Length: 395
Image (cartoon, rainbow, N blue to C red; front, top):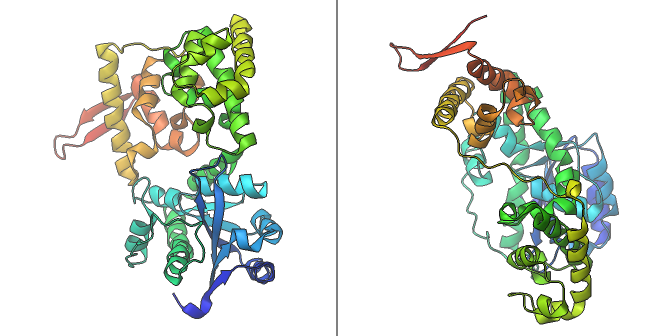
């Protein structure tokens, strides 16, 4: 990196000048550094950006207002280039109030052209650009000031090579005819900070053991988890600082109805019982009073029949064959649980399943073939010459 083209932005006028430069570019490399151990929303410390001929670190606490940068991130004519950028997009959405779009994620694009799923940035830089990064400040506390020149240079490395990598990946995607594929993935990535799964009333499903509860207890857990989400956000502390997951599970399972019963719950801190005891008891009563129609759906767990297990193994082999022919990882197409769902569903219901393998480019690449195998319309055999699977279609 050329030191004359590196900038450390720590005051508002410098940010204004930088944003003027950024608006002139069609592609903007983007990354963030944050500290998240002690707050509900991680505290954004640095934003790294790069355009052709310029790389910069923005010291977020120092510059104050990010209004001019917000305008750049919201500009639909500027493509934001990230690597494994889901968390960065979620954080920027929480801080600046909107999702930076459109997006080009080099990790997603790399998976589409044969580099494997979830390749790291340093490894991708080495394979595409031929430069080995030191990665010496991986565990840096980015909230400490002043930052050293080494820290600033390290932070800038995370965006400095994104644009040349993007160019090479884009060229390969275009040559392989996969620009539409990757666009589907980027559209999903852009919507991830605002999708339905982030509803506080769905948070209970991230608590380990939720699916072991009875349906009525699941309803209680759902209400408790949604309350905790709002309380943690209001106090800006991690969820576990309000009430730990295992304690929520215990409250839902035993549903105490009195202050004494609440205080007897193992793991519930006395200060939290003092602060929110009546609220918690009210939420438990509210959850218990919900009619059955409003209870969460109980996940159906069943042991697969031996024949079904064999069918899943067969679909895995077919999926691997389809993926190898396109030089992408099978895991990018479908997981074992998706294949199990295909096998378990009635033939007339398979098309109604909400599975990635049955949508978009994944369906065109492998999903249709898997359905035809299950329907007996595609026969799987072994080529005696090559030892590879052979897929033969019948009308």
